[in-house]
Image (cartoon, rainbow, N blue to C red; front, side):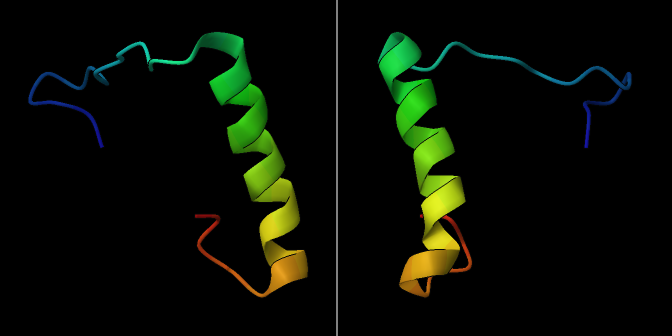
Length: 39
C-alpha cells in the first residue's frame, strides 16, 4: 500500500548488496527448511 497520495515510500537498507543476496537466499531456501514466512 502506498501513502495518502499513492506514492510508495522507499528506503535504503543497510548492508548493501550482501543484504540483498542474503534476503534472496532466505526467500529461496525458506520452504526447504519448513519456514513459509521467509524469515
